[in-house]
Length: 236
Image 1 (cartoon, helix red, strand yellow):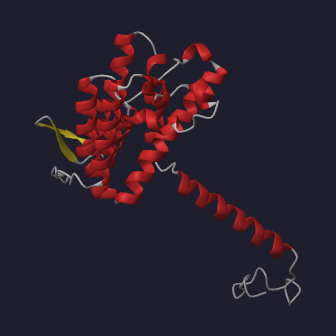
Image 2: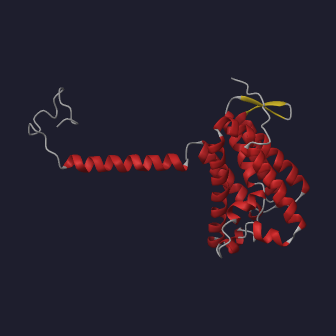
Image 3: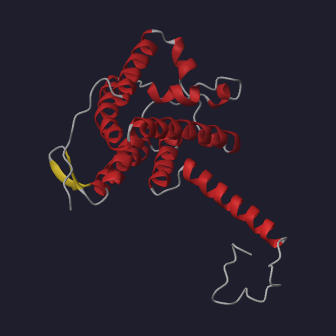
């Protein structure tokens, strides 16, 4: 199996911009306390028009360690994904996973309010990028703090951090967006991507339209040659 070397991304990359956004947003929100209620994901506030929270909450950490490690993950692991996928796909994945996790959290709050907290911030994007990077490598070799592991094992470690947080917190409700993020990341990396689903839908729709049109056409030979080896159904 091929061994993938680690290549530090440029701070001017999209991943670097996301890392800087997380640091700046978190520090400003810590200095100006009322901003937390504006930027964090509050399901009730989203339903009252604060729709930007479906994205802003992913760039809001509440502890120094969260800010430091979150920025490192966005810059390093996110940068590796950007290098592999290209900037457009990397940004599309990052924004889509973040927003979908936020929307799913709000919908769960509507259905099961006792399962959802009143506010969420941070780590949904960092955890998703970590797992996506591991799954991207798959059975290939990478390293985790100097230990040689496969990409699949690295993805399990990333998911394990979230599950350990759930276990030690004794509550699933505190990590609902992160859990949704892991689910959507796994589906995305297994081919359940919005653009691919849309392409398949359009293909199926086109095939159905062609079948309907073909049903109104008659063969010039009355259908006598339709079963013959020399027949071409697209020419009749």
